[in-house]
Length: 151
Image 1 (tube, rainbow, N blue to C red):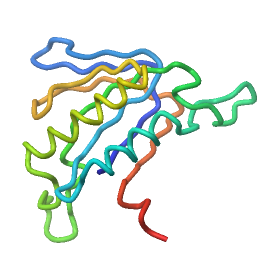
Image 2: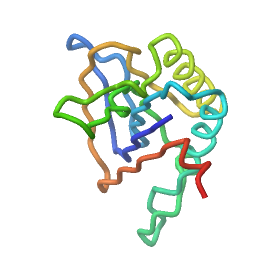
Image 3: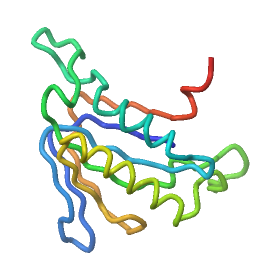
Image 4: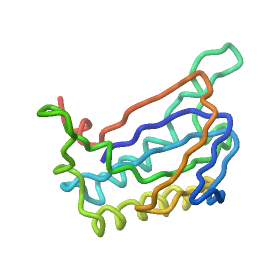
């Protein structure tokens, strides 16, 4: 499972010009689900993301988590995080999970984050969306749940 995480002062997602999700200060999380992902990857992401210390403390050091600032998350499904560009000029998405599997795990991520009393706004799984965000920093982090297994 891959998450591209951006620290934002605000963000929103639109479909056909209508706002379907909106947050204030927090994180935009673009989430891609891989074909070999499982509930263990969901657990990793939902533990790690809210605890990442990527918000500034009073000295300007990134030392405070989303939980500590009571920030919000805008969660967006993004299978293109599994785009493989090693061959040719068109990305291959062979490593991305098929939509039914991806949606099931995506929904689990959303539910587990919500169960932690985090305000979650979402796009619509599989929809063509426009995402507007105001980067804060900018701070962008790439998490891959499979990286936790490497030594």
